[in-house]
Structures are given as structure tokens and as C-alpha cells.
Length: 394
Image 1 (tube, helix red, strand yellow):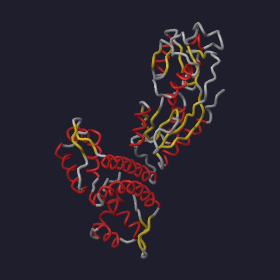
Image 2 (cartoon, rainbow, N blue to C red):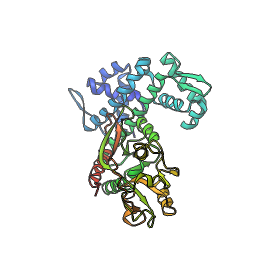
Image 3 (cartoon, rainbow, N blue to C red):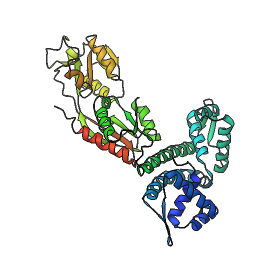
Image 4 (tube, rainbow, N blue to C red):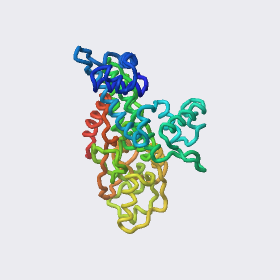
């Protein structure tokens, strides 16, 4: 893993631009031996040479080009936000200071930030103080809730989070040259994706990359969207949102899904068909939580006819709990067709022929704008697309 030394990164990029350590030393205001030492350390950590050294200068090889692309993406965004506060930060800011800035912006307390980083409180306080001195301004406001980050501080912290994610991806990219698997692919899995799409895709992916770590993250869409934007999650898989919730993410539809109404075998409505809403509204339901695409369609079903919602509703996002509730009661379930495909197939649940013409919902990937996946991440995305083509409505 490459050390998170921002000064070494800038020296490396200067040599890539200027072709000589001498010119890079002048640009970075360091000695030529310091440039040589920085490059030597980076090459050791990167697993091999980064430059072709010729009498005409230093030229990036393939490994060097890979690292250069990641570092430019990371530092261009970070430097832009820091220079808006003070140009000096581009020269003086360290990885440790940015770590402290991120921790403080989230924790709003030196004690909590230090605990999160596993450092002594004075260490975090000193890092923030030095950063603010170079910024020439205070970056936190003292309130009754704690030390709240100012807007410029939040923007720098956000840029730093994405930069750190790029550094992690650089490690993974460089490891590919040596046939190693580094880092973890982090997937935010919404309920529908957990039923078939994601398990099948991961199973296929593991056949070719048995050692690649994959972390599947559960949670609400709001939580996952925050993680995605912060670089803690690489992609979200599940129902897409309309309109797009924020401007810095993009959505890619993979397939269209529809809702169904399900119940236990032997339910009083199992043998009927084309039920009126007057009948359905009298029954108890288990439905997803508010502010989800499924719940919006369920609510719209009754709202469009000017009808009140059913009196008896259990709100639940877990297919396991829904299955158990339905099997033990006369509840009706409104859920994605793909989510209950196995349960309907094995007879655990039955799909009721309600006659409701549910509109389709786009299911797909949500990623950060301008996100460039590593080779492993890209392979998993391609497999997800392949699996999605098989999930067509029968």
C-alpha cells in the first residue's frame, strides 16, 4: 500500500509533468535528493518502477500512468477546494490533518474525533489548529451542539473523503500488475438486490476472483447515499429514484421490476381475482417503510381513487420478517416481484391475482459522477449487468 504522503504525491506528479527531478525539485521547493528519495519510496510501495528513465528524461510507464491518473483525480478536486480557502493549504496540508478535519466535521467534538481516529485528543486538536493557521481562518463554529464545520470546511472534508477513496483505488489498481487482490469492493444493497441479482453476481465474480474482498452494506437509501457520496460505498444497487436526489450521482437502469400482492397459501383471497380496492382496503397489509419507491406506489394506488389508506398496516423492509408475518396471519403483502420470486416458486407464498396494473420501476446502479472503477470493480459491474438481463418479467 502506498503511504498517504501528499508531498510525495505532488513530487511524483511534478516529475511526470516536467520529466526531470531537477525541475520537479524547483517546482516543489525541495532538494533534488528529496525528490529522488520520494520516488524511490513510492516505487517500492507501488510494487515496481513508475518511470522509464532515459537520457531525454523521465517518462511514465504503465504502472506510473495508472498511479498518475488516480492521484490527479484525487488532488485536482482536493486542491481546488483548499485553494478556495487559502493557496497555502495546497502546499502545507497533510493527510493526518485532513483525517482530523473529516473526523471533526462528523463528530463535532475533539474527544469523539480523537476516539474515532484512535489518537490522543491533543494530537487531533494540534492538527486542526495547524490547518486553521494555514487557512487563515476558523473552520469550525462553536454552538450548543458542539464545534460545527463551516461550509468551506465541509467542502474540503468532502473533497478529502473522495480523494482518500481514490488513494484506495490506486492501491487496488497497482496490485493488479502483480496479480494481487487489494482492498474491498463496497456495495450498498437495497432490499430488492439481495434476493437474486446481487447473490448471483457475486457468485459468478468469485469464480474468477476468489480472493477479492466484497463488503455488502445494508441500510436505508438515505444512509447509503451519504456513504456513496463520501466514498465509503462504491455503488448502490436497487430501485432508482425519480427525480435524481442529488447532482453528484448518476443512475444506470438495469431492468424493470413490478410489484405484486402476496399472501399465505390458503388466504381467503387466494381463489379470487380482480379485486376492487373496496375489498383490498378492508384487509390488513404489510408494506415497506415510507419514502421508498414501493411504498409510494402502494400509497398512490389508493390516493388516485380518493380512498383512505387501509386501517391496519405494518411497515417493514425485511423480506424475512415479511415472509414470517404473512405465513402466520391473513396480512397481504405489497412487494417487489423479484423479491418474492423464490417464495412464490416454492409455495411459501402465493401471488394474488388482484388485477392491479402496477407501473414498472427501474432497478439499477447508482454511482458517483465521474467515478472510475478499478478493474475488479468494473468486472463486478459488468456481471451485474449480465445477470440483470435475465431478470425479465415472465
